[in-house]
Amino acid sequence: MPKLFQRFLTLSLLGISLQAAHPLPQPFQQGVVAADHPLAAQAGLAVLKQGGNAFDAAIATSLVLAVVRNQSTGIGGGGFMLYHTAKGKNGVLDYREIAPLKSHQDMYLDADKQVIPMRSTVGYQAVAVPGLLAGLDTIQKQYATRPLAELMQAAIQHAEAGFAIDAHLAHAQEVVAERGAYPDLQTLFFKQGKPQPIGAIHKNPELAQTLKTIASGGVKEFYQGSIARQIVTAMQANNGLITAADLASYRPKVRPVLTGNYRGYQILTMPPPSSGGVALLTVLNLVEPYALGWNSTGFGSSQYTHLLSEAMKHAFADRAQFLGDTDFVKVPLQQLTSKAYAQQLQPRLQQAQVQTLSREAYGLKGLSGSSDRGANTDHGTTHYAIMDRFGNVVSATETINTYFGSQVVIPGTGIVMNNEMDDFSKAPGVPNAFGLIGNAANAIAPGKKPLSSMTPTIVLKDQQPFLALGASGGPRIITGTLQTLMNVIDFGMNLNQAVASPRIHHQWVPETLFIEQEMPLDVQQALQQKGHHLHSGDAENVVQAVMFKDGVYTGAADPRKGGAALGY
Image (tube, rainbow, N blue to C red; front, side, top):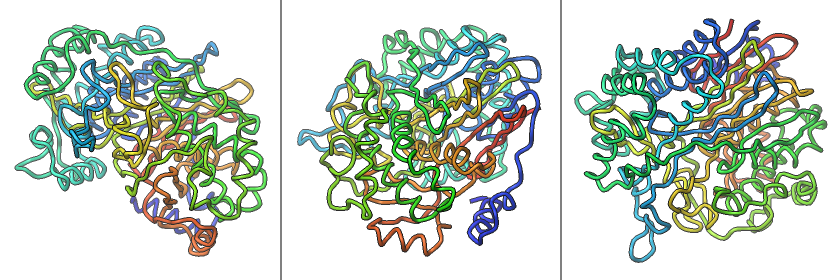
């Protein structure tokens, strides 16, 4: 954890105000970009300064992240983009990865219907059809003002010339090395069989050439041209599932924005196949009646933490039971995100004790199944948020799932491929890499998209942009985004405070309340008396946020990962 963040937490727990513990974010007049790597934020800002809009900046930012945050994202992955245009249009573009046509519901089970270890997380059979480039191409054609080839130049430069490995990338390499890194990944990132240290210059000339090919021939090179042929050849040679037909048929999908209201603010967020927006609105609806009281009970108090964690459990219980790709299953969206549903749940929320003996006490309907796995700490995801001087807003979360995805690198391309197939439910009640369980709604099917936790969110006040944010960190994406939003609206924090403040996480299963190590002892004891099982660690989610308030732009990049918020 960065020393600055440790100092911030220590001061806040000593009773010193958050304002004193963390400086005000820098104000900007023309626009702002927040990303979890400084080079990506710089690329986006450069586009804004050159007259481009937020969509231009988003493409440049995304592609640089695909190079310098290859443990988290890349053109072998996918994502979701939520946007608000200068003309007032709200939209969602879904470029999530898709299950190959050869996939089937029991593909990760043996003859005894037991899950085959690692099959869905490492290697060629873990890879779903990538959508990131198709998504960026769609956005460029509809809303951008600059050609794609121009917006790719910063990414090409960083892949070719190299960039310094930072603490997060070094840590990610150490994590996969401890687990036993796949040979493809060792060849690309390791030196003499060992992870590279902080400060070492990492180059990916094959990825640079791949990006040049796309810049010259268009995104069709990836889905139908020379790069597609390299992907298919590698898949055929390694028992992978992706075919030429899978790549050629991939299309991003425009989806309706999921909307809600919280304390006079309009919340725009992500619908399925993400669970993030549904869970976010569920929790906000549940806690809204108590929000005014939190100003007096105090941020981080045991009462606040208890109510918030219980609300999280209700949301995650419904996630496990009902949520999946709405192109394949019926999801009761209106019911789950309604104020009336929250009112039905609130008597259970007010229980003085945790319903530790009955999972069925949470959500619309309980789900049998168990998991003693903790939440995975991988940050195999990235988020960026952008506001421009024209009034456009972009909030996008992109991913390859866990650190370095499947660890497959397509020979000759430098492309690290995702392992999004693990986000499906391999069998009812069986946890994925993040300890999340599900049922038939999220079962594997050809052409289906796995359930996600990505939660790109935009907040409007009086129909005008106010806040855009999102996070990385598996299921903790939802709770990190949620708490940052509440920090701003309920506690009046500036963005630096809101993003850096200590967070909690509960995902219903396992029955554990994850807390940051800095929670005061008396608060921990009070929570334990209410029946909570506490696990102390780091937040393991990383939030990026931008805001427009009182005529100025501000931004914050989470100190937990070391990004940047830049504007002009």
